[in-house]
Image (cartoon, rainbow, N blue to C red; front, top):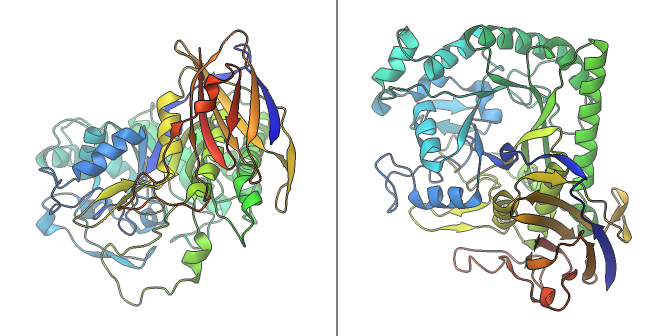
Amino acid sequence: MHDARLTIDPAFRVAPVRRRTFGAFVEHLGRCVYTGVYEPGHPSADEDGFRRDVLDLTRELGVSTVRYPGGNFVSGYRWEDGIGPKENRPRRLDLAWHSTETNEVGVDEFVRWCRKAEVEPMMALNLGTRGIAEALDLLEYCNHPSGTALSDLRVAHGAEEPHAIRMWCLGNEMDGPWQTGHKTALEYGRLAAETARAMRMVDPGLELVACGSSGSTMPTFGAWEATVLEETYDVVDLISCHAYYEEKDGDLGSFLACSTDMEYFIRSVVATADHVGARLKSRKRIDVSFDEWNVWYLSRFQAAEPPRDWPVAPPLLEDHYHLADAVALGGLLITLLRNSDRVTAASLAQLVNVIAPIMTEPGGRAWRQTTFHPFAQASRYAAGDVLRVEPVSPLYETAEYGEVPLLHAVATRSDDGVTIFAVNRATDGPLSLELDARGLRITSATTLTDPDVYARNTADDPDRVAPRPNENVEQDPMRVLLPPVSWNVIHLS
């Protein structure tokens, strides 16, 4: 048994809860689009070919924004391929994932799906093989009301009203040598700056995201952000971070503490951005869009045989998540919320089938992976203001991050009361959490746990790992027992 304490004080306000923290990501990769969000022959398919079961789960997940169409895919994408009559759309080789892209789903279908899913579209631009002119063309097609060649083309394709996309990513992971059209920081920074300036000539109110580093272990990390922001500081609003985590060589303790790296990543990027702002003598503040993050067993993908042909929507990156993955993901969510003063947007990568909280069978069932639940609960219950909490917790030693606390937590406060999101990283026993909440009392609590930390949900057993009431709160209104390796949501009023 471990003991920890937590103080909740409304004065310890960090920032408002950002709804865009709960964004997701749909890329033309594997089965994310085809047999994921879109499957015309499926029993649940609607008149546009979208799976209603996936739409229902997306709304239940509480997704706020969806980034599209990539990802690595976007750096070779010709957006014009995905508009107009489907029978006339060309099939293309996708170099990023060694697949054939049919272009049955394009920008108009994506926006239509977003409206049905009740999410905000977030569009990524190809700055790998294309540039300023193509970005302006897509912006005109999407957002201009009518009366020009491209806006009238959109109207002719059935979208009379503008798509009104506000948030645009200026490329994707351009620091990565795996990226089609990979560039140096200076090359990318100049292109991103000129693209942003041109786009703002069309609409000054757009929100633009510059590419930051693809990970904190990149050899150019830090220097990349500094160079890119020196070129783009006055014309962008956010800079991106991307990070993926996995359990390596059975080191569960380090894996459960992976949010330590995310915290370092965010603070480093914020410090770099503020340093550039100070050098430029700017009063503007650049925020962070953490628009790719998740648990991803990348080492398995890298060890797999590459495809020998060019299949359509092959099953790629279909990680099947267990309890420990969900708890690690919960810790990452807590870190994003704790940094809501500077992380104002984020995208869980991805939404369906591809390292995703939602899994589907072609022609068959859809179900919630273990990672679905922390995201859905945080999106549902995080409201009002984020409160900073500094737990008094036992520490444990990790091979990767040194000493870290067993308890990782954050709280939010709204008119309905206070909600605490907490992860117990201990593998050897429960953690007794005592609360000092300034007169508030625990009213209910749920826990996501299982005796087997590697328990998974499947189509046949979709609720093996799911949030369940934590009954011990009835014994003490100011103390709750958190099971080992668990994600917990505690409500106070």
